[in-house]
Image (cartoon, rainbow, N blue to C red; front, side, top):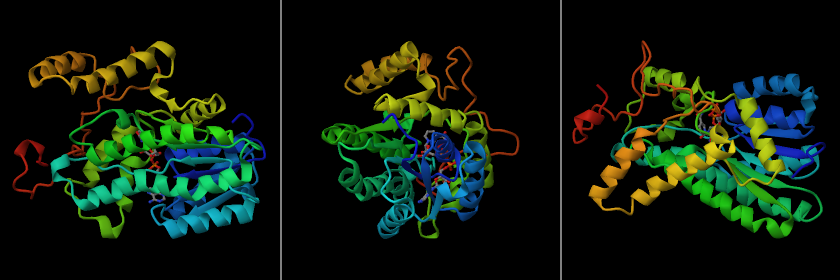
Length: 340
Ligand code: NAI
């Protein structure tokens, strides 16, 4: 998709962080933008920010407040977009996401239902609701495209990031399927896999729905402060939006924005593949291989400057508490994994 002006974008999570950056970028490219989010205060603020950034009329931004895991509400929002802007989106960008980290063996059904619900099930909802409408309206006549914001976590397993990594991995696979599936209709798909974004995701626990609050992880103001300190070192959302725009224009399927220059990207993918290959080795061989790989491991690379030291992900700032720990009251959980 190369021409954006006059077309319609639908961006989930568009009131904050990466989604807001994308809304600004595609609004500036001349698109009418619908932003979907679950926080009304953030939506209200975003409309002004988008129009100030792009110079568009506020009537060219449609704010929709609903929970993306609610299929009926999602379908109603799709109808509202068509009624307001005159058709389904040409560009669907599903960026809303939440995270919560802790020992996978301490995870509850609520942890999975919330994180997988928003990061994967809601993406399925968007694709099933919008793609048939997009095909009917635009196939082989007008450019259209679907994109999803996944994560570097899609390529890595972590004992403390289970539900999130599993959801993101599934999202990637789904988007590879759509990239193939949409070819006969003259469209394609892109999956954006950032490492770290300067966003508000560190506060996601604050709006975890009341019926999914039973977590196995230790969550507090302090753990959110730690997470926020990590995300403060991430890529700027507008810069990330520009990277996504270039990827859509050039039909890239996977985008690794922190490693987007040739050799860095290739080296990163080789490293990730080596980790997967190591799962095929014997236990002894794998221990040696993983030790070798860990020597070069960079937890959260910042920008394209690969010579810069990685941000200190595990440094807990003053007044914060380490995120990623299990609840203190789970008696069978290893002491080393419990909040102190
Ligand atoms: P953010 O918290 O700033 O924005 C996410 C938005 O999604 C929020 O405004 C939130 O209200 C909305 N949202 C959450 N649940 C929702 C629901 N059920 N229905 C409707 N809206 C909902 O976070 P950020 O970082 O901008 O996240 C965007 C995407 O980027 C997510 O998919 C996240 O997993 C991904 N990502 C983030 C990274 C980071 O370091 N922040 C790194 C890699 C990927």
